[in-house]
Length: 111
Length: 112
Image 1: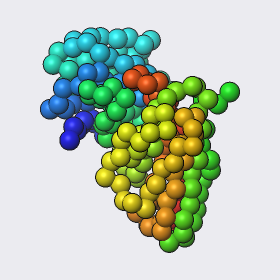
Image 2 (image 1 turned 180 degrees about the vertical axis):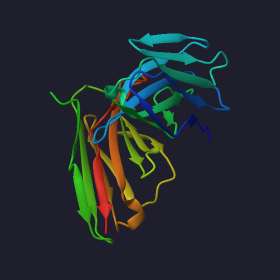
Image 3 (image 1 turned 30 degrees about the horizontal axis):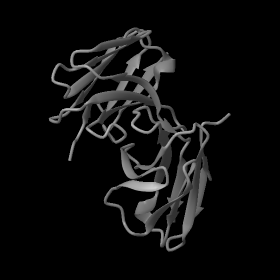
């Protein structure tokens, strides 16, 4: 069974601070996705990383896929209250339509 | 123009009852899923259908039975509801072989 561990589980910071969320596994994934889930809604895809070592930027969010495709990180610069939400990483294996989700990181950005 | 819709959004019921949750997607996707999100927010896959054919069936009690009348719909019927079934159930869809999953808004099930 493939497992994805996310850390930290909970993160509460002040507006303007930087943060990094980690997603680790002992398994290799063909790709890794990051989703954000807001209260009362379903997860929404932020990014997909496919190549080992790949870095993708989405405004103040930077996503990196580990060289060995076993881990990933999400870095947010100058966090804003609108970044508050549950961040989920999800790995796809051989069958790309099947995702294994991490446990999630609940981020709260205080004004 | 809702992409993936689920009904009902909230479901409160007594232990032992039978209930159904419905899901519809208008994205033209071939693959649909049911996930369970527990109180700790862990999202776990339950079932997946591709073009009305069951392709993923995780270790889920037999009381849960998915049904796909056509590729745009995937319903979930639960028999003899138990307290531990209380959770948020999400439907999702994706293009065949694609990776981006589009989630519905969830159905909050509370079994009393």
